[in-house]
Structures are given as C-alpha cells and as structure tokens.
Length: 476
Image 1 (cartoon, one colour):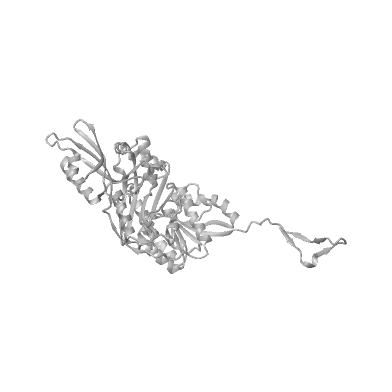
Image 2: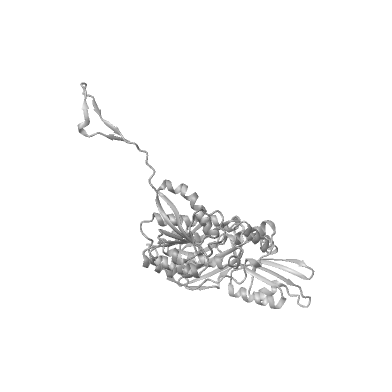
C-alpha cells in the first residue's frame, strides 16, 4: 500500500520534474491474540464426549480468527465412568452446585433427558449465561419457559443442533418474512429411522437387524424407542413450528403405527407402486389451527425425500405464496451433532446483541390430516366371504386410484394401493372395519408425491388458488 507524502515532502528538480516522496506500509496482518471462550459442558457421554474431542479440531481453525474454545468444567452423572478420547485434564464433577459456581461464557447442554436439563437450563438462562443444546425433547416441552428465562437474564438459547444437525435453517425461518411466513412443513427429521429404513430397502434387513447395525456404528442409542415411535421427530417438528412463529401448547402425538411395524415385504410392495417408505413429519398451518402427522409415509420416487441417503435428513417449507424452500444434510452421528453445537457456541461468542424474544402465537393441533394414503393389507381369504378387500374398503368410503393384490401364501392375500385424498378419520374407521371383518392387518400411511406434500388433490389446490384470486382486489 502506498501512502502519499505531505505537501512539504514534494520537491522539484532543475527540469521542473515533480518528485513525490512515498512511504510503504506492510499490509500483512498480525495474527490476533485469541479470545478464550470459557465453556461449561453439561454431560460428557456420546454427544458431550464428541464435543470435547471436536473442540481440539475446531480450535485449529478458530484461533486464526481470534477465538479459542476451552471447556472449563463438565457436569456428569458418574465421574468414575470411563470416557473415550476426552482431552486430558478435563475437570469433571457430579455436583450441580459446583458446576454452577463456575464462570462460563456459554454452556453446552448434552445431558439428554428432560428433568435435569430443564432445571439447569432455566437457572443458567435466568442468571444471564447463554446455553446451546441439541436436546429437542427439553426444548419442545419448555420453549416458552426458556424464552422467558433468557429474556429475564438478557441472554439467549440456541438449538440449531436439535433439528437437523448438519443443516442450519432455524434462524432463517425465524426471521420476519415478507411472504407471510411458513404455512406448510414436510420433513424427514430422524437420522436413526432414515438409516434403518434405507437398510431394509437396500439389504432386506429386519428393523431389529438394521437398528443393531446403527448402534454399532454410533448412529443410534441402544434404546431407540423415541426414534422408532416418532416421538423424537414430533419434538423436532414442535420446535420448528415454534421458530416459525407458532406455539402448539401441547405435545404432537405421533401415529400409533411406527417404523418398528415395517417389514421388508411392506417396503417391497411400496416400491411396486413407485415409491419408498420414510418417517416423516407433516404440518399445515391454517389460522389458529394446524393439522399434523408424524410417522411412516410412502414417498413417490420423484420426490426429494426418496433420494435421501442413509444418513441424510431433509425439510421442505412452503410459504403463504406457495413457494418451496428445501434444506438437506446429514442428520445423524455424534460428531455431526457436536459440530453443530460448536457452531452455535461460535454464534453466541461473536454476537454483539443477545437474540430478542420472538413473537409467537398459540395454535391448536389437529391429527385429522387430509391426504392420499398408501394402504397395505394382509389377510386370510374366507371362502364363505368372497367379497374382496377392495370392495370392503369401498364400502368404508376408501377409493383407490391405484390398487394391486397378490397371493402371499395358501389361503392368504396381500393388497396395496394409493387412495384418493381422504381424512385420517375415514382411514382409521376403515382400518378397524377390515381388521374386524377379515382378522387381517391393514396399515395406512400418508402418500407424498412429487408436486405436493400429500396434502390435497389438484382440484383442491386449484380451488384454493381461485379463492385467493376472488379475494384479491381487481387491478384497474
């Protein structure tokens, strides 16, 4: 960089040529002395241990930008428990009061569970200590209380790692929108079930065998009940809705049939109809209500969800204009979660103003979604009751746009199909009738195709567009 001299340094030679004195300054920047961010770590198990290990790698990049992360202390349930690859000298305590007596710039919550994290997070936020967490269960159940505590303490709570750890999108949907905000959500939110269902399709494994592999690879906890049942995804959907500006007030209840009911035969029949099975979370916001569903769903082969890899999650958002935004990335694994948590730590450390409390409105959740359905029926033929399964379902108000039957064994049959759009209540009544009449099994999952999230027929979408056109003032 050239710095021109002052006027007094300008000289002239005998030929009236002008010479300007110049000084040169070194444009190279010195590496700043890094600011140490003191971290308190709640829990040092699978995720907490990964955080401790990932900090070493993160500091290699962060120090050059003036930040250094350091864990001051970790609160654990058992200080004598062996822990793999954690940094030497990490101070552990099983006394919450000793932990809370420490001075931290931010606390990472990786305890898991509900009661203990809830109390500790409340106390930390109320005293002004920022908290980051991947615990979707505790955030979904206590989001409003945490927001109040953070406001009281003049601080913030961040939980990007609680949704899809490999994708940062919560801050984006939480910002004020010129298009009216999010109106529909369709998502694959659980990494464990995505791996399990992908393994069933690719290798014909049972749910138990696929889950065992996921545990061995560190992609699932030994007790995966919350994953398979949909409770984990339901908590994630609830916190996503809250970031979109709506509070459900009550927990979202998953479907009664979970991923653990899916067999290789069911996935094979789903493929016959040109799709695959995923665990999905669906929500449509309409006024002061929202219809929601969390559980298995049939996804058409042209839909983005059908192309996800075994470790990938995805969320598709629609705004009030009908425009869709898609986010996808890795959704399972302790290292992925740890990196997401540390990204939130850096966001806290580099923010100059604590995030303000977002305005949310309360809505009611209805489970009676209207959608096409993938139907799988397995039943024994009764010669005395020759009526087919299709006819029985037709009497129950279930009509199909595609329907196939196949013999499963002597005296037994299977049927699969995709219905026209139906209310969930109609499907539940039909399921009960079929089970009573045939003694067989009938499973029904939402069918999500390429152009919709499984919500409405083309005619219904055209009706909504026409209604908006009529309500809009005419242009002169």
